[in-house]
Length: 514
Image (tube, rainbow, N blue to C red; front, side, top):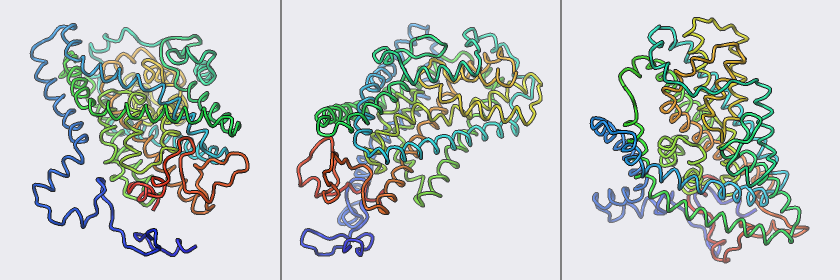
């Protein structure tokens, strides 16, 4: 009880003496240490070095746009474009290489290290957050489309529509949800690493959803084994930590890869002027909807619940968000997102490595917004008025079907076909959407991963509050009848030296707890 009487910003040392703590900065220095005897040049140098990766990543996106616009004048052929974009392709391959070991090992160790009751609470809160934010994002998409009316002018009917030869075959809504259930229960775990079920049969495309369900169930089973499962738990934790070391190495290659990804995609564009003249209002509608959701709604939800500055949290995600824009893949961004929320935003490993893989699969805020805009856009293009029931159908179908878009090639466009079928709209105009999907999909991915990160931050806040009320950390493991409440908090999957445990959490973790 004595510790409860210590005010915020104070601590007791090993002798019991009370000391006042100054707020710690990202590099571990206090404000007093930072300013004492430090010249302006040294301060600038320290800030630049402390945020070097963020600066490099943002610069890479800007440089990629400039290089892409410059190289377009050279009129490269398809082979030369492939050569030009090779460094970017290499980044995507490196990130995808990490996905399966990261998802499986992090979820097995996470599910094994969390009390089953806490696991249910965390999962319930996470799914509620993902459902509510996706529904809000869908509503924003519909509202933006009704206000801006991107399909009201006939200029949208251009020869760009003739480019879409690979329109996905539409299928019934019931079939879509049956395929979602099939993906949840894969018949072959090895095949699930490179195959999914988008149309009743296995096709190429990683089935992350099935791997997630298996990993969580396997982690719970390991916990039930008690001491007999401890060795395997340590194996998965060690595998997970080694994977994160690889991720930290890949992060330093990311700026170069992102620069060439963005540049190569700009070089590939056919006719920028015609594209934006025909579909400029549609593109603007999607991006404004994403901006409203990502810069206002998600930060507002985070602030209302935690009473913390959401934009400080958002600044810690810049590297991951830039990678999401460059790769256009939530799954490929997952390793960097874990690193960012843990190191920059103080989210514990138990939370981030449990919830982020789930969010990367089922939380599709950006995709839901884009699909609703596209559905209303196509209705306006064909001069088909939408009644209230059809609008509600679009909202509900976009929210529900966005879950099944994960791991499926052209998943966003496929689920758009489901929405159009549900409200009786023609699917042939999906070719217009395909013409700009490469651009809109990037902002979709940024919003998707931002929603995942805010979800992890809110769960950390929920765990901290619950821990204060119950006097026990939800992430602790109790094997058999062993009483661990009197022991310092530690990862049950990897024992560390005592002095490391006594040192307490990093400054960023303290701030998140406080």
